[in-house]
Image 1 (cartoon, rainbow, N blue to C red):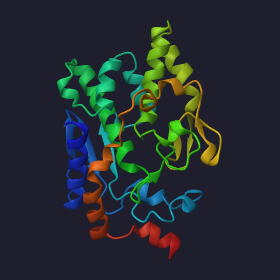
Image 2: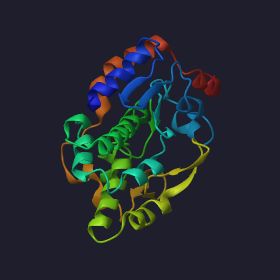
Image 3: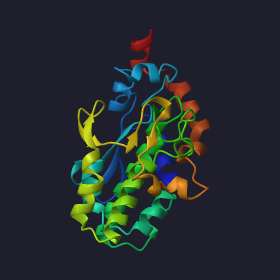
Image 4: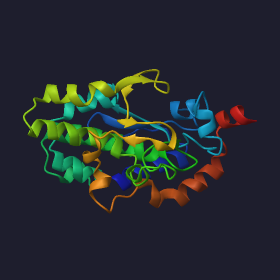
Length: 255
């Protein structure tokens, strides 16, 4: 599947109230979290996020879990398995929406690339500026920094691959590139209740910026035609939101 087909499949499962996993590749699948049953919905209106999402009444309506051969996908572990093994040219094509199956990858590379594609899709579906998404720094229109206003959610994970690849091309080993790039960003997450890979962003409020050591690797900043994948599906999602109703977690938080 390409990115558009995968998002279409996710929306269809939620429209049909069908929690059947979506097969992606071998043991990799997406598990729909129907009727606001996922962690995205449960934590959208807690703590500091409550003020962010007062006008977002459907957060988590399209949530799903990425289940790969290791269990539930974790960005830091997937990055560690993939850097230096999946060609960066293939990852750029996937970032641009291509189907990993057509990129001439080995079986091992294809399995990893498909997992990465799922992570890109998860960012694009569940994070953004719309009332069914968690607020993100990437593409938020009120950011002072133009590079963040013009970014897309999948930039978050792609930057790590771009920067690690650059370290390797400049002589670093795979292990040292991961230590330099990702270890400082492995931090505690309120949403996940564990340590996760966090966006390389500095500053506060709308004055946040991507850190200077990551900024050269922002793909949306290096080409002019990058768009959020969710945009072509918005009318359909609006109908789903109307049909399903407000999140019960929004109702509990504000009513």
